[in-house]
Image (cartoon, rainbow, N blue to C red):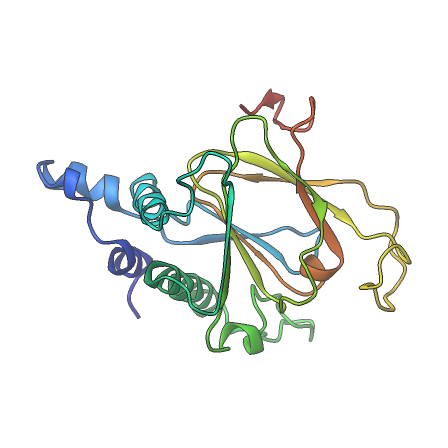
Length: 237
């Protein structure tokens, strides 16, 4: 199977402004790291892949988004597409599947049985990973300095399995469990202790995958109030 660098190069190509660089410098600027996935253990079904896209590939993706003409007006900060996605979005969807498959393939098979008889957590259940298409709906949000998004669970009309890709800057996204009885989406589950906000640092180029409980039973938000954008004692600007 092709490695992650080759897959992403197929999606976004080489940067034209890097052609005059020496080969070693060019390699380091265009290279994407092999995907390294982290399971957010407090939340079932929440996974984080830091450095999914390099800075150069982020710039290529931002350029592709801007070329769609969705944000020509300053008042436009969101674009939604259903079914008929741009070619770059379809290719990005494929690269997400490849990164998920590569991680499970390199470590252990999806849903493999552990030594104690349990099941190894997987980034995406196989019925979601191999659906066609993996994603057929897209939301692009533009956040200006000081802007965020209120705590919410994505609409039920959208299926399970959601990817969030962060571009150009970092932020802290907080996850809060939906209160039992506080929403009609909550079905019968085992009692959970009171849960505080779970902070997750989304660095530029990182990818979040939400499925199952993380998708349906946890709200996510970007809170820009003082004290919420803190990580390791430092405030993120």
